[in-house]
Amino acid sequence: MIEARLKELQITVPEAPKPLASYVPAVQTGDFVFTSGQLPMLDGVLQFPGRLGDGVSVEEGRQAARISVINCLSAVKSVLGNLDSIEKIVKVTVFISCDSGFTEQPEVANGASDLLLEIFGEAGKHSRSAVGVSALPRNASVEIEMIVKVK
Image (cartoon, rainbow, N blue to C red; front, side, top):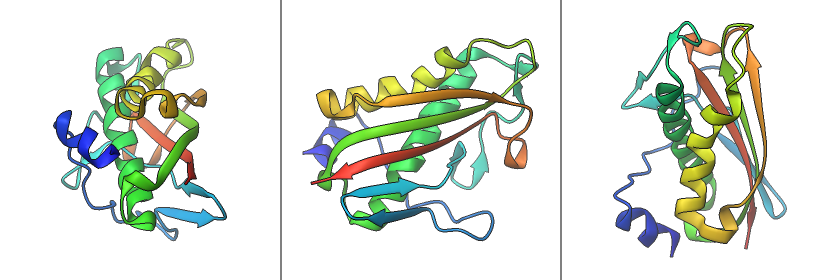
């Protein structure tokens, strides 16, 4: 059902990105899968590097969040085998590299949240944190981690 919805939306979930350090992309414990933080990597290339409020626009941040959450889904898929096993998106944490005066973190995070709602419908409604930080790995503008409940 979810895999079919992704095809309908013309969204390709890539292979899980290779970790940039000593960790795994996702871990299942019981009925939950926890992802590691995922950057907006597309075909091995970081998209929208830099900081919000200093060269990266809110719309670019939204796109970075969208790519990052797709990478979270790929991490989940690497553990479950397919995304149809997801019962509910439980929690999304969005880290946004930004200047100290930047306050539009929720608008950036909506790039991920809106996509999850589009894919999963009611099961995509989740709790969320959108946190501004001074820097992220590899000069990424956004990093996302996610918790999903499995059927």
